[in-house]
Length: 419
Image (cartoon, rainbow, N blue to C red):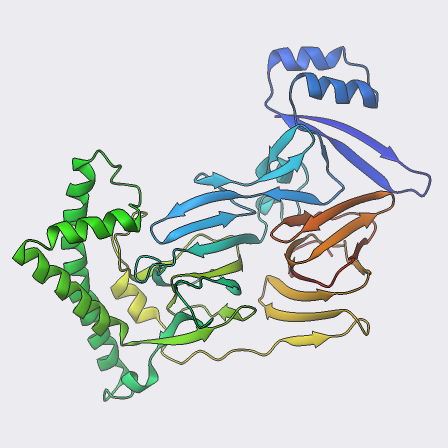
């Protein structure tokens, strides 16, 4: 890679770094040797080559990438996987986020130069069953969900659901926890056999219409196929068996209500499954591991479930929501810490007037409602609802202000990052 950088210091001593990043080539290096080292020459050179121009010391406006899922989609604002990479918006185009982090790493650990808190939106389909996420648990990953929307088709009364942990009444109906886990695991295995039988039928349907078997089929198509195969008596019995076994299996799992504005800090080792039509903003550690206990569709990202290992690891205690910690910086603004982990923290900010934001460590800022202005010196940027920025580590504090009451989420790293 080649970085084209213009650096200047204003009268107050503030540093402004801007430029572009491009794949290296012999021709490019030769052209740069003869290029005049002034601002206009650099800008025109990048325009001519269609290289995006970015102010590295300004907020990085994030362009998300959409990842299709069997249950809906994920929208990654800081994704850096092979499956999808987010970008930083610039003048004349965008730059991949990993390129930006390679040049300006935000972590103090050189081996984790591209590690940033993962910010994404989970947007499940409103269809019952087809829009339910995997029931899974994590050993390392830490995450928090903030509910931003409930589909009125799925939840006409405005109360959604999340599966979270085990039903304590069912648990205590067994003589001991080992018997409870054995019973639940047996229910999962019975369901998995029927699930895989139906998945094989759907795979045949996909091949018959030249549909990629590794891609999720839309619910409308799945419903059409179910209607077709249910004409066969044996298949109809299989479909009914799947429904009964799924209901029996899910009876072991606790379900919690969710309203817009609620948040869930998901504990490690706790089974959880966001339900259909509940859209959330998620912040998580950039660790891509999970153990799948069950799923009411075919799992496309791996050939197996992790039920047996996951059940043995799973905590059996009920979910206990931790209260937020409240700070009032003024009579108008309110900041709450809604989730604090060992490596990052998430705050909810109700903003009605301007205030400074710490820039001694990077942070992610997402606007949920309203719009805000971020400024430093004579540079400013407007951020509206649904947009997110990465605030890089710079020398001065950011100033954030609004003309209308706004609601934001901010995630900040803790230990191991620049302070």
